Image (cartoon, rainbow, N blue to C red; front, side, top):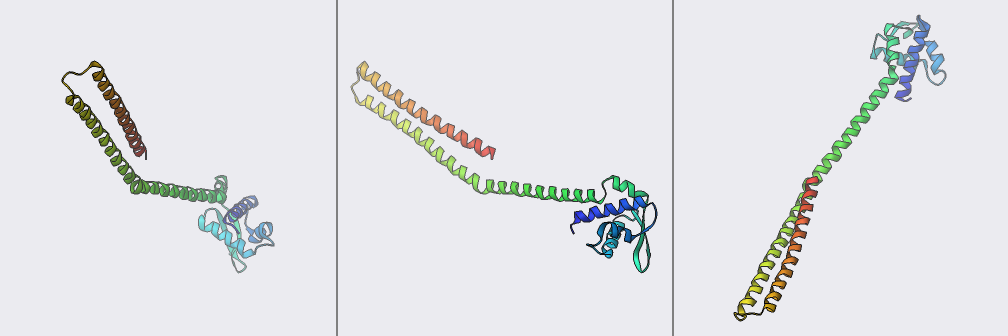
Length: 201
């Protein structure tokens, strides 16, 4: 028999006791709710469990060789049933366990995410940052060498150069400069994206 069914039976016993308004034999409860599938001793056991939980819920008398022979409702019985009785107590207990298990699952998942973030994410982004900074340095060095190369070409020519050659050299410098600026901007955008992603984790 499930614990929920036992809780329902206890509430039925208490309601029946309220209905009787006097002492009555346990046999009445047995015949009303348990016969023929369960024994009389099981009914007596449920009554003892009620008394163990709260002695003010039910009054019992021994007799005829049994510890629980007769019983009667008490003043607190009605109030207890109005609050939901043993059925409500069972539901509340189940909800507590459900909440505890749910909370335990959330804590475990959070701990796992933290552990994964510490052990795998940070080293990964650290390597990527080093790689991107290396590429950024390479772009800067390339830009410097380009300037040096163009300046060397100009210095090796005659002191007087034509306007066309000068304009051509300046145009080459602008094109190279624009290409390098685009690479720098792309690398900066990648770095910012990685930083924001790492901060979000």
